[in-house]
Amino acid sequence: MKLTAPVPGGPCWIELSTSDVPAAKSFYTALFGWQTETDPREEAGGYTMAHLGDARVAALSPVYRPGQPPAWTVSFAVEDADSVAEKAKAAGGSLLAGPMEVFEEGRFAVLADPSGAVFSLWQGRAFAGADLFNEPGALGWTELVTREREQALAFYADVFGWTARASETYPQWGVGGEDFGGLLTMDENVPPEVPPHWLPYIAVADVDATAATAQSGGGDLLMPPTDIAHSRRIALVRDPQGAVFGIYRAGDEEQSRPG
Image (cartoon, rainbow, N blue to C red; front, side, top):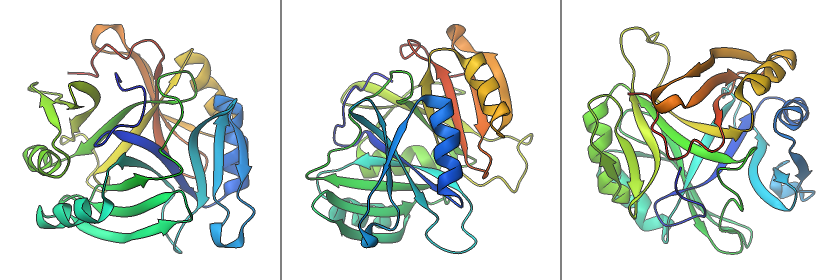
């Protein structure tokens, strides 16, 4: 994506909720070279930061409720989480948690869009969001996967003021003139039990090598390494606990996701 730092309305953080944090630490450390540090405070609930050097790039945490499936969540930066949450509800979204204070770090809320795709709001204070984007091991693209294309285009434009660069097959989200993600419409080939969701893509130096590492670490390839529009190379991975994410070749940020 073209964004290189958190900006209002743009993606600022990704967080994995998982059924096995120690196993996830091992898997993602081997995959991306992350170093992890768990907050020792009891009230933090095992929240674990992932770093590349000194740069904070992601977080891992236990699932919040029994039976919750492991999944990655994308957070979007806002200046006022309460007002944006209200705007999302008025536009047909649902408030799932918060808004709530997170120590001195900021204010947080979890929502679902009208189709059920879950995302988060982050009103940063001491912590603005990720320190690094687009480099190997860091977030580089976000994708909404949904069956309700027109509903989604209207909802996110209303809530965040996003633009959607015109495409018959793959609109690209933008904020402040900079693209950061896209909208992939599920068709009849996608099993009906797959829910709408936000999918983060992590940049890597070598998609094929990273995909092989994921498999050897117990992950599954939902899409093997594939060249798509403008020679961008991507793959989709499901980690050993079941959370799905994408990887793509770093340096392809200027190229489009598939049409």
